[in-house]
Length: 385
Ligand code: NAD
Ligand code: MG
Image (cartoon, rainbow, N blue to C red):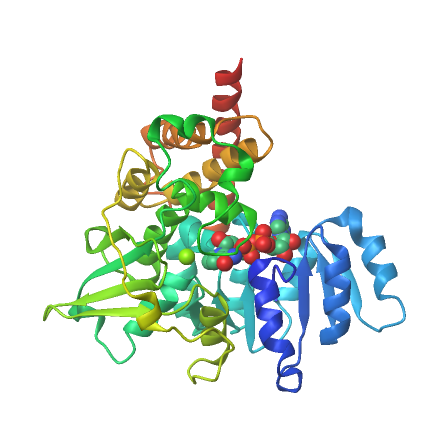
C-alpha cells in the first residue's frame, strides 16, 4: 500500500482492518508521519515499511525494532517494495512521485488500484500501454472514475456518447469572484463535502482537481476530449454519469465516502458489503446541478488545452500545478496566481517544439516535470519581485 499514511491510505487500512485474516500485507509506505507508519505496519503485520524520506529511516527502524518488520527509505526502496510479489497494490501517494512505483508494480503483474491521479495525468498513455502489454489490471479509485467504470460494466465503450464528471465546486463555489485573489490557505483547505488530504482539497477549490479528472477520464477510458463534460453538483452524491447512444444516462449515486471506490477496487470483480452510509433519498429531497463558470475555474480551460495537445503537456501541467500549490501552501503566492502561472508555463513549454509529439517515457516525464517546476518558480518569483 503506497501512501498508506494519507487520507486514501488510512481509508484503505480501515477496510482491511475489518477483515484482517483476509489479507496478507506486504508493504506499507509513507513519508513524514513515521508514528502512523509504525503503528499500522505493526497492526497489519506488514513485511516491510518504507518512508520516502531517508532522513527518517533511523526513527522508523527504531520503532519497528524487535517486530521482524523490515524498514527502508528513499525512492529506490519504494520501487523495490513495488516489485515485491503481491496480488493488489493501492497507489495513493500524492503527486508525481506516485508514478514510478505504480509502473513498477505493473511490471510484476500486480493489479493496480489507482488513486494517484497524477499517474494518468502525467503519463496516461505510458501507464495504460504498459498495463496492456504486461496483462496487468488497472482499477480507478478516484470516485468519479470508479463511478464511470461501474457504469460501463457489461457495456460497449463504442456505445458511449459522453461521460459527465460531477464537481462539488469546492470551497469557493459561491465566493465573490473579485475576492478570490485574497482567500486564505485555511479557507482553501476546507471542502464542503469530502474529507481528503490538504493538496487535493485545495485543488478542488481551484478545480485543478477536476481538470486532472477530465484528463484522467480521457486517458483511462480512451474517449475523446469532446465526449467529456463536467457539471457542478453541490451535493456530491452523483459521482459521474455515462451517456449512451440511445440517450440513456446512467448515474452512479452514493455518499461522499472514498471507502466505496476503494472497497470496489479491493473486492473487484466481486461486490462485498462496505461500511458506507446508505442514502435516504426522501431525506435528501433534491439534487442540484449548474454549469461551471469558466471565469471562476480557469483550470477547466487548461485541461482542454492539455487534452488537445497530449504528449508531455500533462506532465508539464501537473508539475507546474504541484509547484504553484507548494507556493500557495507556503504563503508565497495568492490563490488565483496558481492558475495564471500554470497557464503561462504550459503556453511557454507548448510553444517549444516537440512537447506534443514527444514519446512518453518515465525519463521524459521526469525531465518535463523538472523543467516545468523550475519555470513555475521563476514565474512566481518574478511576480513577487
Ligand atoms: P494525502 O496527502 O492525505 O496522503 C499522501 C500520501 O503520500 C501520504 O502517505 C504521504 O506520506 C505520501 N507521500 C507524500 N509525498 C510523497 C513522496 N514524495 N514520496 C512518497 N510518498 C509520499 O493524500 P490523499 O488525499 O490520500 O491523496 C492521495 C492520492 O489520491 C492523490 O493522488 C489524490 O489526488 C488521490 N485522490 C484522493 C482522494 C481523497 O479522498 N483523499 C480522492 C480521489 C483521489
Ligand atoms: Mg475525484
